[in-house]
Length: 276
Image 1: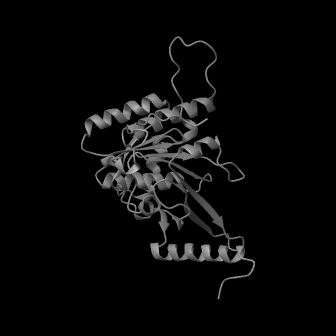
Image 2: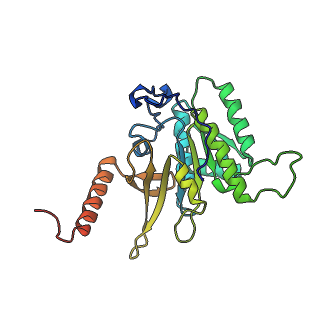
Image 3: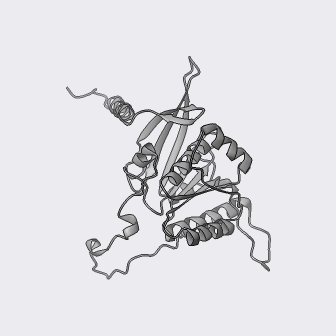
């Protein structure tokens, strides 16, 4: 059953032409994040307002490091970034910020309930009317929903609350053009640790993989856009983890690596070999 997002739809007649529909001004241009590689992975030159993005990766792979870096860069671009964490204490997040030597910071929060997260964003939208709000949730599994007063029966399971909370947050962000980054976990097999429905609901799925060389033990991070409703999917960048965060390869070298990988896979799929 698809998740119902409260998004407005244009009024159309039975014989309306798609060319008659006017694109909302909020969707006409992408918003630069200040992180060149992320901008290219999303819409090529930034992220579309209201985009709901799932960010997955192995524990310790660098998801929080990447998102904290993006939040800091967004603040440097003049936007407002809210980083809501249920995974780590704000002291731990502050240590990460210090280690990375970030200069712009972001607005920290530790709200558990979706209703409180929305209330916080609304207060910021009121205070910063001329600025774009970005929301980061670390992590998906920490979202809960307040139980209605007087409601009978057993409380909803944690999994059900997570889904309900996600629906509330996604609907709110879509309706108010707030880009929403949602960190999710993976299991020991490397699969997303959550309802697969979530992967179908989000606009983008960004995965940070850790590739370890069996001979040298050297780790390499690969940031890949696995799903993208507003741009290309399957694109990736290679990076290494440093004290200052993820250090990405240049765009040209990454694109060459991507091109080479695609060509090699194509050759393997062709039993007659590459064309001469």
